[in-house]
Length: 150
Image (cartoon, rainbow, N blue to C red; front, side, top):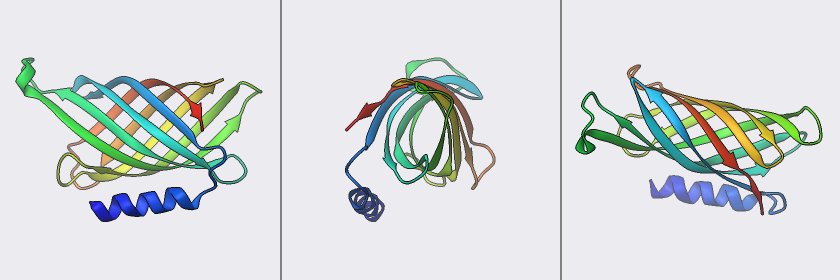
């Protein structure tokens, strides 16, 4: 785990510091039951509307009983390649695709995708996480966030 974090940090610092974007977000998810998600993504501009984006997503998903003790909490680490399609000066459509690693439990490795609209600095997105180790874990999420340019 430490090797992955160190490798990501080295990759982050190898990119140009100019134009780095931090985007915290929150929303809802669905995976057999409704739950909540929150997280933050950090994006690095590459070329021609392409970005490298990674982050952490914390999610909760209630099991069949609704008591406080039965909530499942997990953490996903997605690594995206992002393409932004400019619609006009203030609106951009973004498409993200890449792998993810489930940090909170063993055996969560899969693919993640996200499509969204950025209106000025406010972002609306629909995300999908599919576990490739087992077919039992798939999450669909809807979130809203705000983008800070560092």
